[in-house]
Image (cartoon, rainbow, N blue to C red; front, side):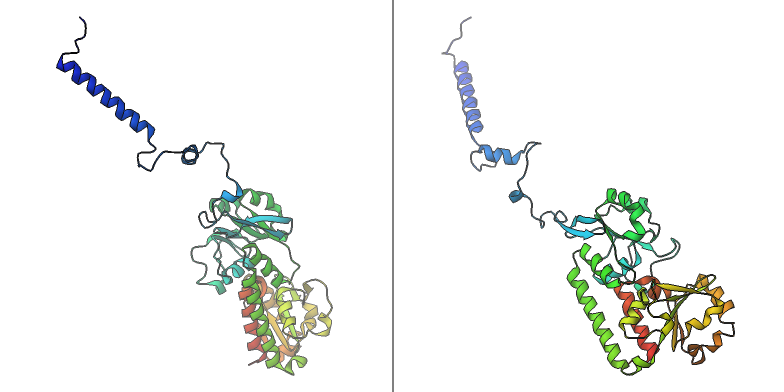
Length: 349
């Protein structure tokens, strides 16, 4: 039957249909539903970037908006390394580095114990290491433990960690420092540079050197009359540590002389036997042996008649000191503690 336009129901239906069509057309011509105006193609692209879109350097997010994305280049034992400009998750692989980073106000997330995983962090760092995860020992880092920490920077030393260097690089950017034995200040500066704190390291070294200068001033003429021997008892012999060692370098900087037989010696230590006890003779003897290796010194050296002939023994100037600071510490905090001991032993006020 033909459609009758004169029927009221038909007229209403047609009018309603036209109204819906007009509203739909109006909505389609507008931008988003927020009523901010028509969308340009650029705005649409910005709202929904394609998977292949790129951002030019000038459009890159700022470091403040994306912390940790900015990088810088430092030099290590193998050349140039790109590292975070502001690393947040640092793993340090040696005890000197832990000492130094903490002195710089940088707390790593992981660090090694010195000689045993059943030991602990060095006692002179007590109160500073809470929350730091153990990553093995200095000589044997635990790569699995390090990887689980998800570090953004790893710092080690070439002579100790070169064998695992490639493995470490697969975990995070890795800086392996390289310094001659005894150059603890240079090592400190390298470690500080890796975490972008070189200026602070120089300040701390300057403070230490000012303390050295004061020690020498306080000692005055006593410096020319005092000699010192540094020894480390081992399981079957004694080592005399030379001016080329870590502690030896500090003693030398402090202006303290060595006996003639210890001067001009290459290497960082000399091995002596029971028959060579006389080679240790000095005004002051400083011993930094580990407790686990004390038996030989106690049973074979101190009971030997030659021991009683030494000047330091006769004048009761043999000092047993903490091996953690004098032997293995090798950081700025340990170095200041070594200097504290020198003040006490030599009466510098």
